[in-house]
Image (cartoon, rainbow, N blue to C red):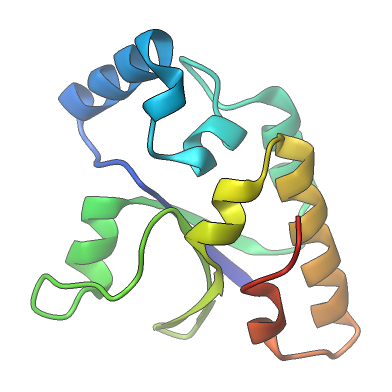
Length: 136
């Protein structure tokens, strides 16, 4: 299974520094819960990195602007970020949407949802749509 994680943040040094400042000084209004779940102020969380190393999946991480450049149609997208997609060849299918991600309160919530979904996939359950609105 190929997973594509898309952060609700843009790439680049200036944007990264702005995000760090936002997380430090006004964390309650920071708009990327996927960033909060997977990263501290300056680097990826250790438990998240260990989890990724152990996953039986190909993983790609994109910022919002990178997603638009690679997958947007005429610079437009029809999904709200953050989001997680399943990638089959060059086609992306929304797997876990921003509403579900934004309800998560811990890295463990995110890791457990991904583990459960991957187990279902390995068992031959192919319908990723089931995960779009899973309770957290």
